[in-house]
Image (cartoon, rainbow, N blue to C red; front, side):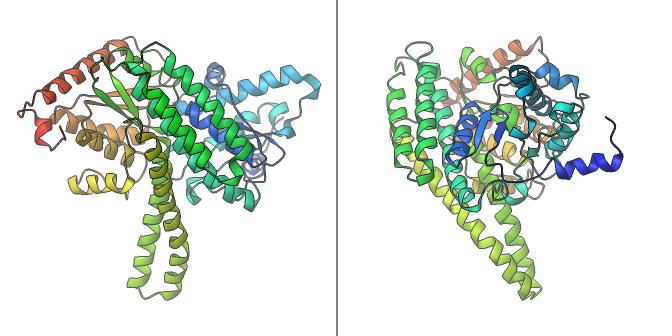
Length: 462
């Protein structure tokens, strides 16, 4: 079927839009494994049948329908949804009904190409007659991922609070795993235990999440950290800590980054990856930051109508920002009571760090602000190396590399770029093994009190 240009553009409005998805099967692309499962549980809690797609099985399909100019997450997510729909069509046969499904693909505002991928993937789905009636819905950074347009208002309010709490819990499950697994008494013990804890959390969220009584979830977090601590072989010396920054999808999607965390652990490192919560906090922080600027300009111009309008927007954003900070601290404190996992970086601290060193401005935005700021915080917190993980050709990550690589090399902090596009790099294992060796040397130098180390002169905490 051939469509006119006018009809083609109309599909971006008719079949890529926000609408109440209650009663539909919501297809969620997999990203961070724990966070994706708990996100689906949050949707189930408010009455939306959500399904996390199997991932990476359809990568060849995703590449078949893309040109290679897209960043890697586009190929992965497109392949995931096409693989699922083809398998579902094969399984159900004539009973397959496209109206039953909704594909969920969030978007981001700004220069990142990700903001256009739900439109681009709409064009691909339209190439299949049997998939043309499957709509795509989204949440956007433009309104801080509000869900008021994809579910009833009352459910959206509950969902937002529940979803934020579960995202932080997912981050903590990750950090418990990364803290314990390199030192575990028996191989596989940590992964097996954390997976069981995840299943308990999913059940709790689905059955009791809408009450917003979080004590039960917090108790599970505390119990998980307390038990996981007993898996650590205390005879093992502490390994060099590696901080992973970069593009949010590839750094948190194990298949896309070819399981870089496990590989670094295998070579003798302990790893902490930038969290999902960091990005959510940044979106709220940046929105409040822009609203404050609007209010200040209105005040300077004595435009009191705009001033009142700006305050009306700013006050609830500020409340949400402090709610997020309070909840995040509350949940982390439960885990930190038992286990010394890495804390998250406050967004205000990252901005202050970059303003002080005049390296980058939050006015530019993008994930570069977080990657550069977090790498510097890792430097000051005693990490022994930084890895920048990103899709090949990613613009914000290229900016991060341009700033971080010469800076950290000058400070003698081990640093490596890790771009991914699905290809296997023949020297990747050697490069990472060498990087970990350098990180071990950096740790030994710091522990020996070598004050000639340039990094030490940059006020890195011992």
